[in-house]
Amino acid sequence: MEWGIANGFFLAVILVLTVFWAKFKGDIGELAVTYKLKDLDKEKYRIIHDIKLKNMGGSTSTTQIDHIVISTYGIFVIETKSYKGKIYGKEKSRTWTQYLSNQKNSFMNPIFQNYAHIRAIESILEDSYPEMTYHSIIAFSGGANLDAIEVTKAKVCKIRYVSEAIKDLSTEEVIGKEDIGKIIEIVEKNKSHQTDLTHTREIKKVKKENEEKIKDNICPKCGGNLVEKEGKYGKFIGCSNFPKCRFVLSQKKKS
Ligand SMILES: [Zn+2]
Picture (spheres, rainbow, N blue to C red):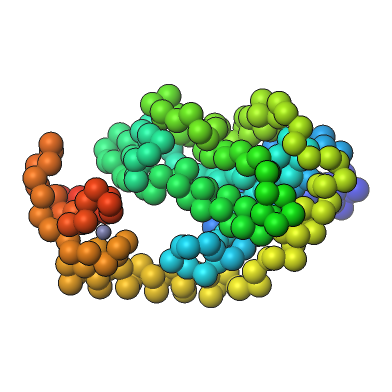
């Protein structure tokens, strides 16, 4: 084999392995963000990928964070979403909706999800950095149409604009350069060593427990009773503790 061909072959193998690895990790979007974050100035922005931290007040013991960018402008917490189609979402709605040509799906509001990540980071830094600024970024893959999303407190963008989004939000320096390393040290020290498998099992267990509760008409969020209610769009099942608890059983798809 000629050197050029051997080289090309070698690169192709690396590429295939990398793609497989990313798929195996469950999200190719994460890899794309990792690639895009390389545009950032390494002196100013330090990055931690795919880390698990202790979950504060959540139903699972750890929370998995896709990317954390630590800079003098504060801490950027990035959640990636691989959804195509038109996305509808509001700041405070429990779920967002994805419209594809022949179906619609709802998914958990990623701002809430990322807020849990921010809480987890905040809780380990609050002793040393109680005044830290946190920026929430939700990065969607290329096939998503984000025109209908109405949010102000988080940045929702395409993965390819993630480093621009970070630069746009880099307006005010809140810590010194020397703090960046200290923060990374604290975060690394608080890393959870729970394996991916245990984490997945735990998520499954919680999901199953919630399903059992719902079967018994118990609200999985607060333990209240689930009752039938009359809403704008017809009957639905919700928590009797409304408005304290806003749990609503998601509409069953017509079969
Ligand atoms: Zn409830």
